[in-house]
Image (cartoon, rainbow, N blue to C red; front, top):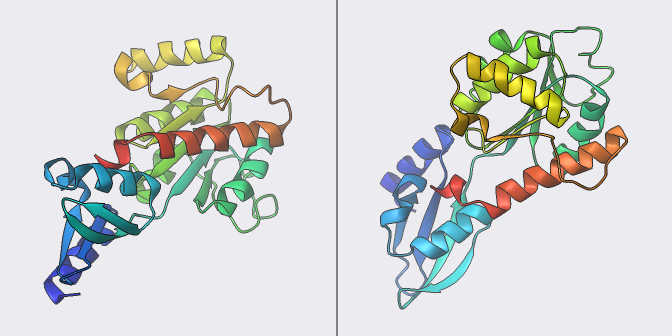
Length: 230
């Protein structure tokens, strides 16, 4: 790989922006395609497919055989609420490759003992979330049922363009949440991005089952949407 291409690639990776190195198999020539430039590229369709899957691979496109080396930022899951569902969801998410962070100012819940091998921040969302620099490669889940914690956290997640945003609660609870957030100036379009009731509708009852439903919905949003490649 040429030095200037490597420098450009490292700059994209440092900024947590996806990119693909396209290598012409016959000539060995390489070029870098940034996620922001996909729509204007002659290989738009295959590039979008690989951005969505996050997997590298060989393709026949535009009359040439090319190898696409995909560089996608590591996925993150940020959870507000050190609750029983979080205890099940965190290890599940880590198994499928997410870097998990739990935020909860309630120190009785937010402890290393309850969440081994997971980053736990025992602070209010206003203080804990900005330094995390969450982005469109972040899934965000609000599980506390406490508006003082979940509402500002959801507002932050919406502003940072997380690819998935979900919040625990019944339809009635979520309706009241929407009223509060709308009163704070959030638009209907922004609020429509919040998945609630959270998770796939699989009849989940236990904390572990609800965690499975949440992770399933996150995975579906990640793999079935082209937004991350836009």
